Length: 139
Image 1 (cartoon, rainbow, N blue to C red):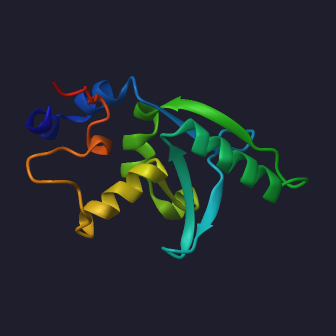
Image 2: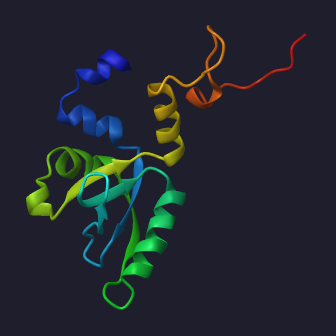
């Protein structure tokens, strides 16, 4: 899919992403809740790939805004938000940057790779990079 995906038009991207679900903490109107991101120094709204991490954010944001704003946890197809808001969204109009938030575990593994962490002997594939691999007992 690698080279094929790079040649997709907007409709092709939407089709590719149609079955991917993201989760967002929103207000009652469906607007994504924004939080201060200290790393980038601006407001950020997140679409979570991990439902568990979205539920953690829902609890945290709900507690922070208790009595001020009622928040909801919504499940949406990424195709409805990715091109329009994440890629093409204007942070000034939206009130902040919107992004798709990868699971924290995947971010840690990516940082390991980028920082030259040990990934195993040459010729092997770390299991976290290919979760569909299974270990079998040797002969």
